[in-house]
Length: 94
Image 1 (cartoon, helix red, strand yellow):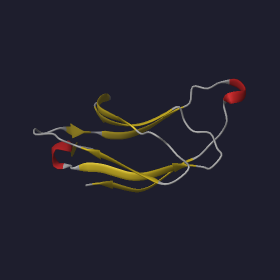
Image 2: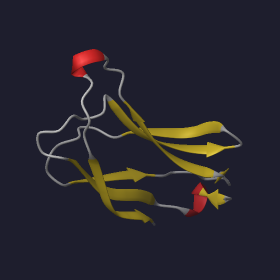
Image 3: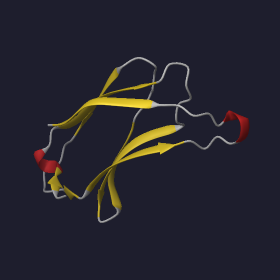
């Protein structure tokens, strides 16, 4: 709670999907204040190899947030809806 984005340089992490498994249609990170999305960062592409993702912040004035939300969306239905895994490591808020 009350993480001030004006004091943060970047959000960084490594991510990969399970080899041969399904991947979400969308993966994003949302920064929220009082249930309102302040910023959203789409994470793509998602591959079966570890990949570094880094999102820079630039906020000259105070920008407090309450939540960091990871959103996984899979809108496929029927036979195309397969289970899969996403792995995230080395998350850093700097």
